Image: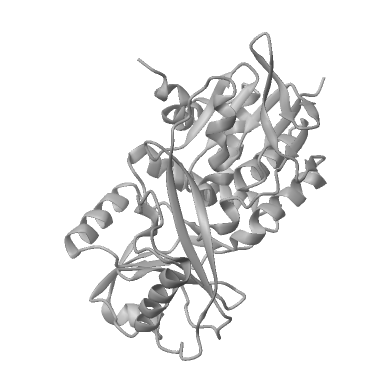
Length: 360
């Protein structure tokens, strides 16, 4: 008998998991409130050069490999242009290079002239930079929709603009999700609701500690092709989409940004970021910010993913960055729920179980 699964959340984690489970024969229903999700407001950088510990690096590197697997079947809007990085001191750059080489992760040292040859539009060329050739970026606004469409082709269903208010339990076991209209029944519930995950878990007395990590990201008006790579610079992280728009988080060091509030007005923040962007690159005489987006990033308290069962029939998946990790986490969840994780996959997911937050 096929298993019925309700997934709460239609961002990259929920959509990619729906695809994996539908392909394995589960009856999948994705329920989305219709509210903006973190995926749509993401910078979209797919990488393993940023990581918090060795296990985290290996998970992120596996995420890149999972992207290449899933893109054989999903028309995901991803470009593998590589990243040029010089947003750190020379000493830190050398340490990062040595660590990544130790992981056998693709990384190169480039001289200033080599950087300039790759990015002719740069005004202030660094003395040296790291190059991560295996990294890419996804057009985040279209990403979840591509996965949902593929999941629907595999048999999944989507319920949109309906808010889930809690998890329905019977004798301590999850049996569906509660909405204002009633309960959507399921054998298995997966909470992949981003920043809404903590409240839904709390409805069954489970604590998933998330910390507020809001951010602004701007998009410029469309520009002629200017940037060839993702750039991680002392003035911010920058990339150009196939549409011609340039994306830039308004805070410097977006990936490691730990601010808990946004005190600056969005237009003032975008103006300041545009000043840094125009100081970094030539060819932007007619550039202006066309949109600034507030992103609410779902960041667990220790910065690491939270993936696993929190009650019989109830599973949680919340993490940052979902863009990098979405496909690998989806594969791991599907195997975990089916009880079919091999030893390597079980070891990969082990550090991220929600039980690490249990009191005592």
